[in-house]
Image (cartoon, rainbow, N blue to C red; front, side):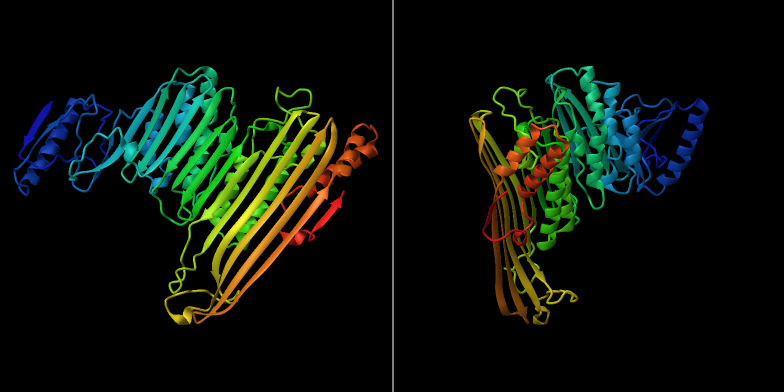
Length: 543
C-alpha cells in the first residue's frame, strides 16, 4: 500500500533506521504505520511552511540501495553502499558505534583475510552516519570513502604465482570502509591458506597502531612461506596528532629484504634488513643474544641522550621484529649454492649472527627555551651492520664486518636533579644547563684465508664520547666545558681460532668444552662496545 504525503515536513522515522529494511511490513502493520505517520506529519505541518514534498512508500522494502531514509532533525541513521548481509558488514555496524575512531578496525583486518577460507574474489562495503537536516545527506554511503578517510590502512600481498591481493580499510568520524581486490590471476588453495594464516598478523599490526601508547606489531608478517607468497606490504596513514601517536607506517617484506618506517609527532623510526647473504647468519641463540645486546644499547642511548621513551620503544619493537624469523639459514660447507661461500664455526663466532641492517630513530626537534631558540632539543641514534664475504673459492676467502652506532643529542636540564625546569621568557627562569652529546662506537672484524690457511683474524673495537655542558645563571653563560673520551682495542684471535680447529678434530669431551670456551671468548671480543670505559686505551693483544 502506498501513502503519498505532500507539503509536509520530512517523514518521522525511528532513529536507528537504515538504508535497508530487512523485514517486509504486513498489510495491517503498514496501515497502522501509515496512520501514525499521517498523524505525526499533520501535526508538524502546522508549524512548517508547505515548501517541499516527500513521497513515502510503505509495504515491501526497497530492493536496492537507491532508497532514501529520513529521520527527525538531529537524529542519525546508517547508510550502506552494499546490502549489509554478511559477517564483515556486521562487524562494521558494531564498530561504527565505538567512541574512538582508531578502534573502529577491531577484528576487521582478520575478518577480511579469513574470508579467503570460503571466498577467492573481491569485496567492498562502506557505511556512514547521516544526520537528518544535513545538507546533501544521503542514505547511500560513497563507494570511494577510503580515498578521503582520516585513517587509512592498506595491505598488499603478492603471491608466487603472480596474483596480487589488496585490502583497504578507511575510517573517519562518520564512516567506515573496507575493500578487497584480487588481480593478476586466480588464487590457488595454497595461496588462500597462506592469506588466512596472516589474518592474526594483520589484525595485530592494526591494533598496535590503535593502542595507547601506540606500538609497532609487525613480527607476524616476517613468518610467511616465500614459495607461496612473494611479498607483503603494509601502509597506514592517520591524522592523529597526540604525543606518541603514529601518523604514517610503511612495512615491506620479501625473501631478500625487509623494511619498516614509522613517523609521528615524536619523530621517525626506520629499520632496513638485508637478507641477501644467508652465509653470515648465526644460529638462533647467537641471533637472540645479538638482538638483546643491541636493544640494551638502544636503551642506554635513550637514557644518555634523553630520547623520547615512546620513540625508543618503537625503535626496539621495529628492530627486534625485523630481525626475527629470517626464514633462511646459513649454508653448510660442501652444500652451498654456486657462488656462495660457507663459513666455519670460528668465522661465525666473530660475526654478530644477524643479517646486515640500517636502523635509526630521530626525534622531532624542539626549541624549548623561549629566550634562546637556537638551543634546540634533539635526539638521533643510528645503528648499522655491513658485511662482505669475497674470494675466488672457500679456500681463498675474505670476511669483513662493520658494526656501528652513533648518538647525537642535545637537551636542557635543571641545575640539580631535584629541581624542576620550567623555561620561560623571564630571566628568573633561566637557571639551567644545555647539554650536547656526540658519541660513536665501532667494531670491525677481518678474517682472511689463503690456500685454506687462516692468515688474519682481527677484531678492532673503538668508542668515543663527547659531552659539552653549557651552564646558565639568569640567562648568562657561566661555564662551557667539553669532556672528550676515546679508546680503541685491537685483538688478534688467530691462535684462539686455531685451538677451535684442533678441538674439532678431537673426540675428547674436554677438548669439546675448551672449543666452546674459545668460541665464547672470540664472540665476546667481536661485539659493538658499550662505550670507551670498557676498552683499554690503545690496547692490542693476541688471544
